[in-house]
Length: 343
Image 1 (tube, one colour):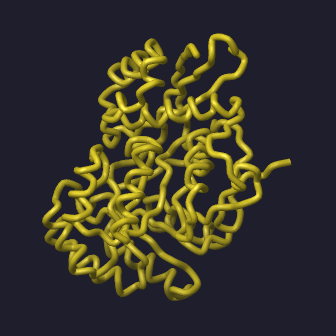
Image 2: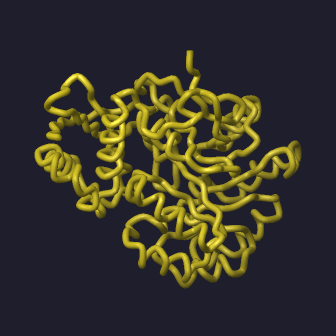
């Protein structure tokens, strides 16, 4: 079998600015790889190489990144035969994996066959609250509750911490723990010195867990926070750039987190994510999968991959409605679940 490939860059526009502790985003770029067989050129598999500036380990600049994608496209047969060559370029590995799976299954955006793909099953997800002015965050919270979400994730760390606590207190006055699960994501905004007290304050509000309270690569301090267990901790950015199985085991055994969060485009594609899951489950560490601002194509592939597992925790798969110019899809979100609305 001989393959051909091409790529194109696409810029997605946010419907409204997305705020995190790393800054505010108004646009999101991605490169799409198309793959086809020379003897069957009308069947095309498409995959999304999705990056987040400042976070994706394989992205430094558009020019540098595009050269990497071009190299893969130019030598597509060699890379398709040995995906491990892209082990340290997770977002490109993610995109090529998707394209090859799509091609294998007929170019129908079928990546993993399951009841989810056929519209017969749905995956529970959390509703995401972006950072911003307190009034804007309060508006989002009301919107998610009205939409029927039973799990809400709020990004914190960009505005005054006391204001964020006030917002969470406001939710808890009206919705108890049994009504709404609250998660928070600090994106490394706390320091090791102030983190313990802040985690105690959050724990008093029946928060389910906090993602990445301090910046990554502070394993001793993160271990101490996990061991103290003021509030269950989910590792997120901490996992980025950890590519070898031995490194992954060392991290899990050293920090001993309560949860881990997996973003395939940042963590070695589906093969890398599956390895994290296997190692975490061996250590009885629960996990959930999160999209990382992909378009509907990437989101669909991640959701189909997730549907292979017997998930009970709400996943982080709700980014498909962020963009004004997203790619058309049958994915829908209904009462806190993502599913395909098949005819």
